[in-house]
Picture 1 (cartoon, rainbow, N blue to C red):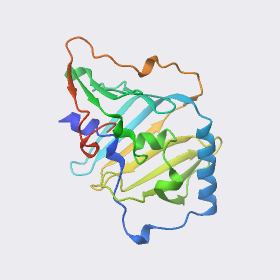
Picture 2 (cartoon, one colour):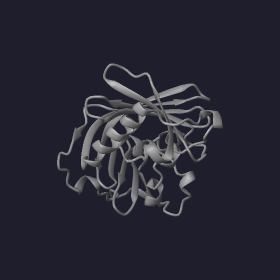
Picture 3 (cartoon, rainbow, N blue to C red):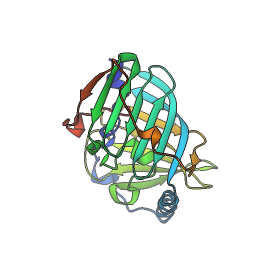
Length: 230
C-alpha cells in the first residue's frame, strides 16, 4: 500500500552502524563545518520552505517524487504538507503528532516520543540533530556552493545506516539530506529557498480532524514501528 511507503519518517531514520573500519576522527575542516551549522541553527527560531522529496525503494526499483512545504518553529513544532498527490499532512505540536491522509479520510495520532531521537531526516534537515555527538562524520567533496558531510550513527539501528548532508557554504543552512536504511532504501529531502526567522505564529501547528474523518490513536505504538515522513 502506498501509505506504507510514504509515512515512515521519524523513527525510519535511525540506523545500523557498519563496522569499525567506518569510524574515524572528524577532520578539522568537518569540525569547522559542524561548528558553523550549530552556530547558525542556534540563531534560527523558525523557517518555512518548499521541499522536494525523492524516495527510492530498492527491492521494487520504484522511485517516488513528492513536493510540499516544511514549516519549523523552535523548539520542535513542525508542519509537513505535501502539495503533490497523494496528499499528506503531518503536524508536530507541543503535545502530540498528527498524520492526516485526506484521500483516505483517516488521521493517526502519535506520541511525541517519535521525535526524541536526533537520528531522523527531519531532525537533520532542521538542524536539530547532534552532528557532533550522535554521528561519526566524514567530509566529502561537495560543490562550489555546497559542503558535503557523510554521517554514520554511533548507535546501531536498522532505519538509518548512513546519511549525506549538503550545507550551503554561504550561510551554513542545510539544503539537502539523504538517508539510507539497512535495506538500501533512500529518502532524499531538498529544501528550496528556505525563509528563516519570519516570526511564525503557533496556529499552523494545530490540528483538528475534519468531520467524518476516522481518527486512530497510536500513542502507545513502539517508535520503531511508526512510519512517518517517508
